[in-house]
Length: 117
Image (cartoon, rainbow, N blue to C red):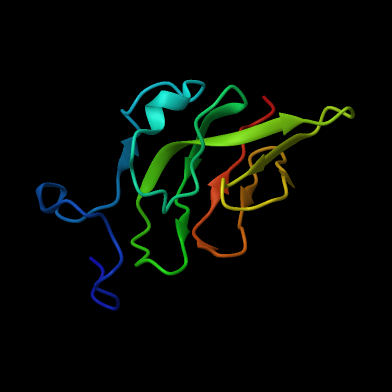
C-alpha cells in the first residue's frame, strides 16, 4: 500500500500494515498512576486535567508511521470558554477549535480537537 515510503502505514503485519485506531488501554486519563513508566514519545499526560484525544502525534526525533491513537493530553478551558490543549513536553497551551487538527513544534502528526456538536 505504501510503496513510496516504507515507514508509512500501520505497524501490524496482521492488519497488512493498514493504519487503524489503537486505543490507550493503560487506564484512565485522570489517574496519574496510569502513565506507568512508558517512554513519553507521544506527549501524553495523565492527571486531573487530562482527557482522551485522537492523535497521531510523535516527537519529531522518532520515526513517524501515522498510526492513530487515543492518548491522554492535558487540557483546560479559558474564562472565555475556549478549550486549550498541549503535549506534556510543551510549556504553552494551544486553542483547540471545533474538529480542527493541531500541529505542535517538535512533533510529527496531529492532535484532533473534539467536535462542538
